[in-house]
Image (cartoon, rainbow, N blue to C red):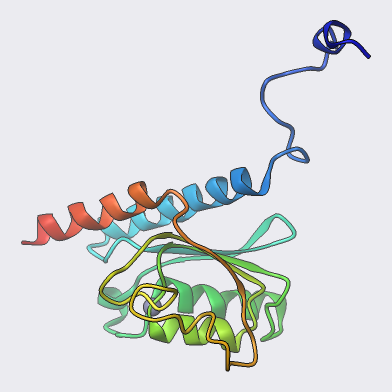
Length: 172
Ligand code: ZN
């Protein structure tokens, strides 16, 4: 087939179809959803962090930080999303799921991700102060733990980090 006949195909568009979407594009699309959840958290006066869990291309759980609302130090977006996904799927193992979160997970959430056997974890901004997926330490990929998820960091990192920076600037 020549390139000209390819260009002339009537169904050709510049936008990739869903099937053609690369994993990187999918990651950015789901991270945008997590960013929307984080913006919602800001409006509730919560730290802007959003998380969602995806299985076979569908969102099975979505949450934002609720520490203030629940008056619960453990009410992190990732932890709530893991609980909701397990309830939705009626099983504690989430090895066929991907968790998206706007900020590198803390020790508690990284631990919960390992316990839930999450297949893949994708996060946005790095957290130099509490991140346990490479910044402060790497609990998420600790070689001695019995499960190591696939990890992708830095997806839409600037946008994810900027939300947090603005939030804390506002709080000062
Ligand atoms: Zn956490």
